[in-house]
Length: 362
Image (cartoon, rainbow, N blue to C red; front, top):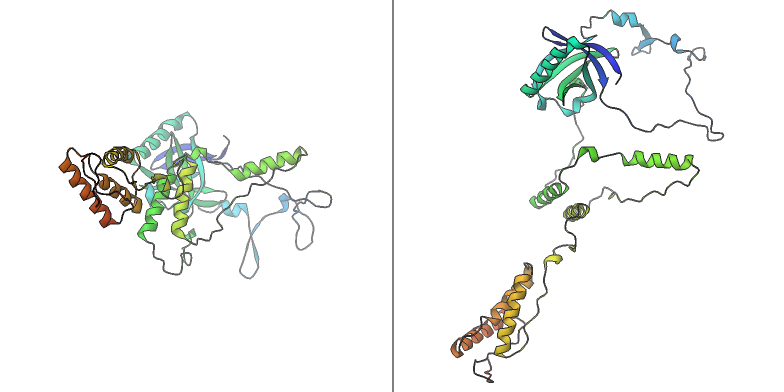
Protein backbone atom coordinates (compact mmCIF):
# COMPACT_ATOMS: atom_id res chain seq x y z
CA UNK A 1 0.00 0.00 0.00
CA UNK A 2 1.21 3.48 -0.86
CA UNK A 3 2.03 5.77 2.07
CA UNK A 4 0.43 9.21 2.19
CA UNK A 5 2.60 10.69 4.96
CA UNK A 6 6.02 10.01 6.45
CA UNK A 7 7.01 11.00 9.95
CA UNK A 8 7.56 9.57 13.42
CA UNK A 9 5.68 8.60 16.55
CA UNK A 10 6.89 10.52 19.59
CA UNK A 11 6.60 8.14 22.59
CA UNK A 12 8.25 10.09 25.41
CA UNK A 13 11.92 10.22 24.42
CA UNK A 14 11.43 7.32 22.00
CA UNK A 15 11.02 8.20 18.32
CA UNK A 16 9.55 5.61 15.95
CA UNK A 17 9.86 6.35 12.20
CA UNK A 18 6.60 5.38 10.52
CA UNK A 19 4.62 5.60 7.28
CA UNK A 20 0.95 6.52 7.23
CA UNK A 21 -1.26 4.32 5.02
CA UNK A 22 -4.99 4.62 4.38
CA UNK A 23 -6.84 1.81 6.17
CA UNK A 24 -10.10 2.26 4.25
CA UNK A 25 -11.16 2.70 0.64
CA UNK A 26 -14.26 4.05 -1.01
CA UNK A 27 -16.16 1.70 -3.35
CA UNK A 28 -18.91 4.15 -4.21
CA UNK A 29 -19.80 4.47 -7.92
CA UNK A 30 -19.25 7.96 -9.24
CA UNK A 31 -21.20 9.49 -12.13
CA UNK A 32 -20.28 12.24 -14.57
CA UNK A 33 -22.55 15.04 -15.65
CA UNK A 34 -23.42 15.06 -19.37
CA UNK A 35 -25.36 17.18 -21.83
CA UNK A 36 -28.61 15.28 -22.46
CA UNK A 37 -28.88 16.57 -26.02
CA UNK A 38 -25.64 15.09 -27.34
CA UNK A 39 -24.06 13.18 -24.42
CA UNK A 40 -21.14 15.62 -24.15
CA UNK A 41 -19.46 15.77 -20.73
CA UNK A 42 -20.08 18.80 -18.53
CA UNK A 43 -16.93 20.12 -16.82
CA UNK A 44 -16.36 22.73 -14.17
CA UNK A 45 -13.83 25.38 -15.07
CA UNK A 46 -12.08 27.74 -12.67
CA UNK A 47 -12.81 31.27 -13.76
CA UNK A 48 -11.74 34.52 -12.10
CA UNK A 49 -14.74 36.64 -11.13
CA UNK A 50 -12.99 39.89 -12.02
CA UNK A 51 -11.76 39.29 -15.56
CA UNK A 52 -13.98 36.22 -16.24
CA UNK A 53 -10.99 34.32 -17.61
CA UNK A 54 -10.15 30.69 -16.89
CA UNK A 55 -7.04 30.24 -14.74
CA UNK A 56 -4.67 27.28 -14.24
CA UNK A 57 -3.75 25.59 -10.95
CA UNK A 58 -0.42 27.41 -10.76
CA UNK A 59 -2.22 30.76 -10.70
CA UNK A 60 -4.46 29.83 -7.76
CA UNK A 61 -3.53 30.58 -4.15
CA UNK A 62 -5.19 30.64 -0.70
CA UNK A 63 -6.99 33.46 1.05
CA UNK A 64 -9.14 33.91 4.14
CA UNK A 65 -12.42 35.74 3.63
CA UNK A 66 -13.02 38.25 6.41
CA UNK A 67 -16.47 39.04 7.78
CA UNK A 68 -16.78 42.08 5.51
CA UNK A 69 -15.83 40.07 2.42
CA UNK A 70 -12.20 41.18 2.30
CA UNK A 71 -9.83 38.50 1.02
CA UNK A 72 -6.66 38.06 3.10
CA UNK A 73 -4.00 36.13 1.10
CA UNK A 74 -2.22 33.31 2.98
CA UNK A 75 0.80 31.65 1.36
CA UNK A 76 2.34 28.24 1.98
CA UNK A 77 5.41 30.03 3.34
CA UNK A 78 3.25 31.78 5.94
CA UNK A 79 1.89 28.45 7.12
CA UNK A 80 5.31 26.78 7.11
CA UNK A 81 6.66 29.39 9.56
CA UNK A 82 3.99 28.62 12.15
CA UNK A 83 5.22 26.81 15.31
CA UNK A 84 3.67 23.41 14.59
CA UNK A 85 5.59 20.73 16.53
CA UNK A 86 3.41 17.99 15.06
CA UNK A 87 4.22 18.84 11.43
CA UNK A 88 6.06 15.53 10.97
CA UNK A 89 5.38 13.88 14.31
CA UNK A 90 2.52 11.93 15.84
CA UNK A 91 2.91 13.13 19.42
CA UNK A 92 1.32 10.84 22.03
CA UNK A 93 -0.09 12.95 24.85
CA UNK A 94 -1.92 10.35 26.98
CA UNK A 95 -3.07 6.74 27.38
CA UNK A 96 -6.73 6.27 28.26
CA UNK A 97 -9.31 3.42 28.35
CA UNK A 98 -10.92 2.91 24.96
CA UNK A 99 -14.44 3.57 26.30
CA UNK A 100 -13.44 7.15 27.11
CA UNK A 101 -13.33 7.94 23.39
CA UNK A 102 -16.73 9.05 22.11
CA UNK A 103 -17.54 7.15 18.87
CA UNK A 104 -18.96 10.42 17.53
CA UNK A 105 -15.39 11.70 17.33
CA UNK A 106 -14.24 8.88 15.02
CA UNK A 107 -13.05 10.04 11.62
CA UNK A 108 -10.70 8.55 9.00
CA UNK A 109 -8.64 5.43 9.79
CA UNK A 110 -4.99 4.75 8.98
CA UNK A 111 -2.40 2.01 9.44
CA UNK A 112 1.00 2.96 10.87
CA UNK A 113 3.87 1.05 9.28
CA UNK A 114 7.38 0.88 10.73
CA UNK A 115 9.67 2.81 8.38
CA UNK A 116 12.89 0.83 8.12
CA UNK A 117 14.60 -1.92 10.14
CA UNK A 118 15.67 0.32 13.09
CA UNK A 119 12.00 1.22 13.68
CA UNK A 120 10.91 -2.41 14.16
CA UNK A 121 11.98 -2.70 17.82
CA UNK A 122 10.38 0.50 19.21
CA UNK A 123 7.31 -0.10 17.02
CA UNK A 124 6.86 -3.58 18.51
CA UNK A 125 7.44 -2.20 22.02
CA UNK A 126 4.64 0.35 21.65
CA UNK A 127 2.32 -2.25 20.11
CA UNK A 128 2.84 -4.75 22.94
CA UNK A 129 2.52 -2.03 25.59
CA UNK A 130 -0.85 -1.01 24.15
CA UNK A 131 -1.98 -4.65 24.10
CA UNK A 132 -1.03 -5.30 27.72
CA UNK A 133 -2.49 -2.06 29.07
CA UNK A 134 -5.86 -2.49 27.28
CA UNK A 135 -5.68 1.23 26.61
CA UNK A 136 -5.47 3.48 23.56
CA UNK A 137 -3.09 6.33 22.94
CA UNK A 138 -4.35 9.86 22.33
CA UNK A 139 -2.06 11.81 20.01
CA UNK A 140 -1.74 15.01 18.00
CA UNK A 141 -0.53 15.09 14.40
CA UNK A 142 -0.58 17.42 11.41
CA UNK A 143 -1.98 16.41 8.03
CA UNK A 144 -3.02 18.43 4.98
CA UNK A 145 -2.21 21.78 6.52
CA UNK A 146 -3.88 21.45 9.90
CA UNK A 147 -3.28 19.90 13.30
CA UNK A 148 -5.52 16.96 14.14
CA UNK A 149 -6.36 14.67 17.03
CA UNK A 150 -5.85 10.91 16.77
CA UNK A 151 -6.30 7.64 18.65
CA UNK A 152 -3.80 4.79 18.36
CA UNK A 153 -4.89 1.19 18.97
CA UNK A 154 -3.72 -2.29 17.97
CA UNK A 155 -5.40 -4.18 15.11
CA UNK A 156 -3.96 -7.70 14.79
CA UNK A 157 -0.20 -7.00 14.74
CA UNK A 158 -0.43 -3.45 13.41
CA UNK A 159 -0.84 -0.10 15.13
CA UNK A 160 -3.83 1.71 13.65
CA UNK A 161 -4.67 5.37 14.06
CA UNK A 162 -8.16 6.84 13.94
CA UNK A 163 -8.45 10.51 13.21
CA UNK A 164 -10.63 12.18 15.83
CA UNK A 165 -12.69 15.32 15.68
CA UNK A 166 -11.83 17.88 18.32
CA UNK A 167 -14.31 17.88 21.22
CA UNK A 168 -15.64 21.32 20.25
CA UNK A 169 -16.48 19.98 16.77
CA UNK A 170 -19.14 17.64 18.19
CA UNK A 171 -22.56 19.27 18.17
CA UNK A 172 -24.87 18.87 21.16
CA UNK A 173 -28.03 16.84 20.33
CA UNK A 174 -30.37 19.68 21.25
CA UNK A 175 -33.90 19.41 19.86
CA UNK A 176 -33.27 15.93 18.41
CA UNK A 177 -35.03 13.77 21.01
CA UNK A 178 -38.87 13.44 20.91
CA UNK A 179 -40.60 16.45 22.42
CA UNK A 180 -43.50 14.57 24.00
CA UNK A 181 -43.21 12.22 26.96
CA UNK A 182 -43.56 8.59 25.95
CA UNK A 183 -44.16 5.63 28.26
CA UNK A 184 -42.84 2.25 27.17
CA UNK A 185 -44.60 -0.77 28.66
CA UNK A 186 -42.78 -3.84 29.94
CA UNK A 187 -44.58 -6.01 27.35
CA UNK A 188 -43.16 -3.83 24.55
CA UNK A 189 -39.66 -4.05 26.02
CA UNK A 190 -40.00 -7.83 26.32
CA UNK A 191 -40.93 -8.09 22.65
CA UNK A 192 -38.08 -5.77 21.69
CA UNK A 193 -35.70 -8.01 23.67
CA UNK A 194 -37.14 -11.08 21.92
CA UNK A 195 -36.58 -9.44 18.53
CA UNK A 196 -32.98 -8.58 19.45
CA UNK A 197 -32.34 -12.16 20.60
CA UNK A 198 -33.91 -13.55 17.41
CA UNK A 199 -31.84 -11.34 15.13
CA UNK A 200 -28.79 -12.32 17.17
CA UNK A 201 -25.28 -11.59 15.94
CA UNK A 202 -23.92 -11.21 12.43
CA UNK A 203 -20.66 -11.92 10.69
CA UNK A 204 -19.58 -8.41 9.67
CA UNK A 205 -17.66 -9.84 6.70
CA UNK A 206 -20.94 -11.17 5.26
CA UNK A 207 -22.44 -7.67 4.94
CA UNK A 208 -22.19 -5.98 1.55
CA UNK A 209 -23.58 -3.05 -0.42
CA UNK A 210 -26.67 -4.36 -2.23
CA UNK A 211 -27.36 -0.99 -3.86
CA UNK A 212 -23.89 -0.73 -5.37
CA UNK A 213 -24.21 -4.25 -6.79
CA UNK A 214 -27.56 -3.34 -8.34
CA UNK A 215 -26.03 -0.21 -9.93
CA UNK A 216 -23.14 -2.29 -11.33
CA UNK A 217 -25.63 -4.76 -12.87
CA UNK A 218 -27.56 -1.85 -14.37
CA UNK A 219 -24.40 -0.36 -15.91
CA UNK A 220 -23.30 -3.75 -17.28
CA UNK A 221 -26.71 -4.36 -18.85
CA UNK A 222 -26.82 -0.95 -20.51
CA UNK A 223 -23.23 -1.28 -21.75
CA UNK A 224 -24.18 -4.59 -23.40
CA UNK A 225 -27.26 -3.04 -25.00
CA UNK A 226 -29.60 -5.14 -22.87
CA UNK A 227 -32.73 -4.11 -21.05
CA UNK A 228 -32.16 -2.91 -17.52
CA UNK A 229 -33.18 -5.51 -14.91
CA UNK A 230 -36.56 -4.74 -13.29
CA UNK A 231 -36.47 -3.17 -9.87
CA UNK A 232 -37.51 -5.38 -6.99
CA UNK A 233 -40.34 -3.90 -5.01
CA UNK A 234 -39.79 -3.85 -1.30
CA UNK A 235 -42.01 -2.72 1.53
CA UNK A 236 -40.03 -0.60 3.94
CA UNK A 237 -42.97 -0.21 6.28
CA UNK A 238 -43.43 3.49 5.56
CA UNK A 239 -42.14 4.45 8.99
CA UNK A 240 -45.66 4.69 10.45
CA UNK A 241 -46.40 2.31 13.33
CA UNK A 242 -50.09 1.82 14.09
CA UNK A 243 -49.84 -1.07 16.55
CA UNK A 244 -46.40 -1.32 18.15
CA UNK A 245 -47.06 -4.67 19.81
CA UNK A 246 -48.31 -6.21 16.55
CA UNK A 247 -45.36 -4.76 14.65
CA UNK A 248 -42.90 -6.25 17.14
CA UNK A 249 -44.62 -9.65 17.08
CA UNK A 250 -44.60 -9.68 13.27
CA UNK A 251 -40.94 -8.67 13.29
CA UNK A 252 -40.03 -11.57 15.60
CA UNK A 253 -41.94 -14.02 13.38
CA UNK A 254 -40.31 -12.63 10.23
CA UNK A 255 -36.84 -12.83 11.80
CA UNK A 256 -37.41 -16.46 12.83
CA UNK A 257 -38.69 -17.30 9.36
CA UNK A 258 -35.64 -15.74 7.71
CA UNK A 259 -33.39 -17.88 9.92
CA UNK A 260 -35.37 -21.06 9.21
CA UNK A 261 -36.87 -21.24 12.68
CA UNK A 262 -40.51 -22.01 13.46
CA UNK A 263 -41.18 -23.74 10.11
CA UNK A 264 -44.61 -25.37 9.91
CA UNK A 265 -46.10 -23.07 12.54
CA UNK A 266 -49.04 -20.86 11.77
CA UNK A 267 -49.54 -17.34 13.02
CA UNK A 268 -49.98 -17.14 16.76
CA UNK A 269 -49.88 -20.36 18.79
CA UNK A 270 -52.23 -22.40 16.63
CA UNK A 271 -49.41 -24.79 15.76
CA UNK A 272 -49.35 -25.90 19.41
CA UNK A 273 -53.11 -26.58 19.72
CA UNK A 274 -54.71 -30.04 19.50
CA UNK A 275 -58.31 -30.85 18.63
CA UNK A 276 -60.43 -32.13 21.54
CA UNK A 277 -63.76 -33.91 20.92
CA UNK A 278 -66.50 -34.78 23.45
CA UNK A 279 -66.84 -38.38 24.60
CA UNK A 280 -69.67 -40.23 22.95
CA UNK A 281 -72.32 -42.19 24.81
CA UNK A 282 -71.13 -45.76 25.32
CA UNK A 283 -71.14 -48.72 27.69
CA UNK A 284 -68.79 -49.08 30.62
CA UNK A 285 -66.58 -51.54 28.77
CA UNK A 286 -66.27 -49.23 25.78
CA UNK A 287 -65.80 -46.27 28.09
CA UNK A 288 -62.76 -47.92 29.66
CA UNK A 289 -61.37 -48.66 26.18
CA UNK A 290 -61.94 -45.06 25.09
CA UNK A 291 -60.23 -43.90 28.27
CA UNK A 292 -57.07 -45.83 27.40
CA UNK A 293 -57.05 -44.37 23.87
CA UNK A 294 -57.68 -40.86 25.20
CA UNK A 295 -54.77 -41.12 27.63
CA UNK A 296 -52.44 -42.22 24.83
CA UNK A 297 -53.60 -39.38 22.58
CA UNK A 298 -53.25 -36.86 25.39
CA UNK A 299 -49.62 -37.85 26.00
CA UNK A 300 -48.75 -37.37 22.33
CA UNK A 301 -50.56 -34.07 21.88
CA UNK A 302 -48.71 -30.80 22.62
CA UNK A 303 -49.59 -28.70 25.63
CA UNK A 304 -52.87 -26.84 25.27
CA UNK A 305 -53.98 -23.50 26.58
CA UNK A 306 -57.22 -21.73 27.28
CA UNK A 307 -60.63 -23.43 26.94
CA UNK A 308 -59.33 -26.45 25.02
CA UNK A 309 -56.96 -27.35 27.85
CA UNK A 310 -59.81 -27.18 30.32
CA UNK A 311 -62.03 -29.32 28.08
CA UNK A 312 -59.28 -31.94 27.70
CA UNK A 313 -58.84 -32.09 31.48
CA UNK A 314 -62.61 -32.50 31.95
CA UNK A 315 -62.71 -35.27 29.36
CA UNK A 316 -59.91 -37.14 31.13
CA UNK A 317 -61.65 -36.84 34.46
CA UNK A 318 -64.92 -38.01 32.88
CA UNK A 319 -63.58 -41.41 31.94
CA UNK A 320 -61.56 -42.10 35.12
CA UNK A 321 -59.51 -45.21 35.70
CA UNK A 322 -60.43 -48.66 34.54
CA UNK A 323 -62.82 -50.32 36.96
CA UNK A 324 -61.55 -53.38 38.81
CA UNK A 325 -64.86 -54.43 40.40
CA UNK A 326 -68.55 -53.69 40.60
CA UNK A 327 -68.23 -51.29 43.53
CA UNK A 328 -65.22 -49.40 42.13
CA UNK A 329 -66.84 -49.08 38.68
CA UNK A 330 -70.06 -47.71 40.09
CA UNK A 331 -68.23 -45.20 42.27
CA UNK A 332 -65.93 -44.05 39.44
CA UNK A 333 -68.76 -43.69 36.93
CA UNK A 334 -70.93 -41.78 39.39
CA UNK A 335 -68.10 -39.40 40.23
CA UNK A 336 -67.37 -38.87 36.52
CA UNK A 337 -70.98 -38.06 35.72
CA UNK A 338 -71.18 -35.56 38.57
CA UNK A 339 -68.01 -33.77 37.46
CA UNK A 340 -69.29 -33.47 33.90
CA UNK A 341 -72.64 -32.12 35.06
CA UNK A 342 -71.04 -29.48 37.31
CA UNK A 343 -68.46 -28.32 34.69
CA UNK A 344 -70.97 -28.07 31.84
CA UNK A 345 -68.96 -30.43 29.62
CA UNK A 346 -70.27 -31.75 26.35
CA UNK A 347 -70.13 -35.44 27.32
CA UNK A 348 -73.42 -37.34 27.43
CA UNK A 349 -72.03 -40.39 29.24
CA UNK A 350 -74.60 -41.92 31.62
CA UNK A 351 -73.90 -43.59 34.95
CA UNK A 352 -73.41 -47.30 34.50
CA UNK A 353 -72.73 -50.29 36.72
CA UNK A 354 -70.20 -52.99 36.18
CA UNK A 355 -72.94 -55.68 36.02
CA UNK A 356 -73.05 -57.28 32.57
CA UNK A 357 -75.66 -55.79 30.19
CA UNK A 358 -77.21 -53.57 32.91
CA UNK A 359 -77.42 -49.79 32.82
CA UNK A 360 -78.48 -47.40 35.54
CA UNK A 361 -79.65 -43.91 34.70
CA UNK A 362 -77.83 -41.06 36.34
